[in-house]
Image (cartoon, rainbow, N blue to C red; front, side):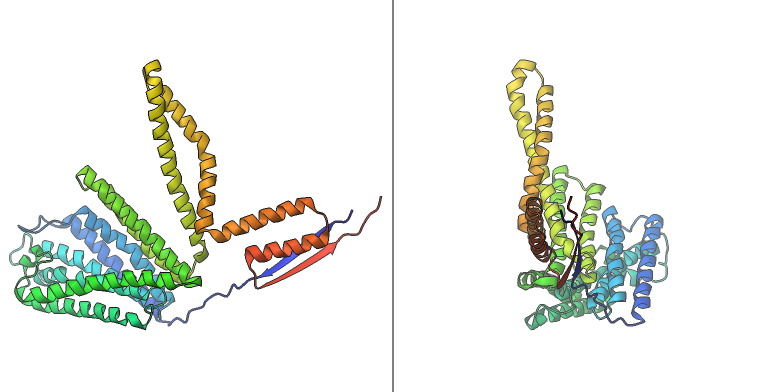
Length: 420
């Protein structure tokens, strides 16, 4: 009998994308992250030492503090992208978004500290109250710009340039609002919210309208870009769309839970923040292209286990009700029904998981599903034939179909024949 040794050399397209980086970009990005970290620490300290707010001024809530901590993830991604890919404006926009967002609680808390228990107020109290009113508005437009330019730093097409100008107009109107509010700076501004007095009403409403329109335009452009995308860009957008879908589903579910509980527990805010934190993480994965091709598998597994959980819960609940109604007249309790439902769910778990996972792979992870089918067919042929030339052809075809290399070499050495 003859035996052979086969060595396959597969050469794929593994070109690493090296971005041209400015030597000063990384220190600047690190410096911005350091400033942000100091401001977060200042928020924590002032939250502890802040006196009761003046009459009519709302205290800082736990969810606002948690959101401030949650900004760390967005700022980390922004600083990394800005340092590694300074030509891509996404990183700088994320950094600007976080710095503007943190200015709100910093200035609000400092104004409470500076106005509280001191007559006259401490230095900078009026300016801090003034900043806390309007600096959060342009962050909406900045985030809209980040969505509009994701992932390569350019709009989906030249037709979307109008959305860039809407965002710029929203930022300009926000600055005009700040100018209009400057003469009225004082402790009264802390109780304004989003209702602006006197001459500030027009630029305030205009700023809100333009900034929200910019955010909506950015979200719509992402959907349009995704529908027209292909190849690597489609995978990048899949990461962001997947994270946004998880965050939206979580927020809707938690909002329903919040309404059912008729309260605002801390764990609801914590889970909401964790869900939103997935969006900057997905943006970082998409821009750095780290494990970019894993998105189809992640989507497939997420949907598989979500559906499996629902199916198992339905089987358990249905069998409990059915067995309970049948056995209660005989046993007088539900213990036997609960045990039977548990056994039924345990017995059906593995078949249901395999069927659901296969269905999800066929729909969302087709490439892996086709590769698995090809390898199973090759294994079956390998067991049924001993002809080396046939195996060589089948092996080459299987590797080509599953790995799709740009070049493939097969070295086959056949051992000498020993006749007994």
